[in-house]
Length: 65
Image: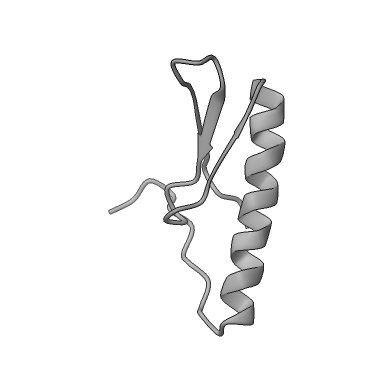
């Protein structure tokens, strides 16, 4: 399953990565590549936690309503 991520530089020049489909799933990195790698790891951990605690997976937001 693929999740949309957003990368934005903050005022300190660090890239902040978020995954809006997964509330609270945020990471960062000194480069876009590092932030992307870090958010991928965060998403994986988030989904593992959902499975561990018996919560169902979120539906992927494909831009629909």
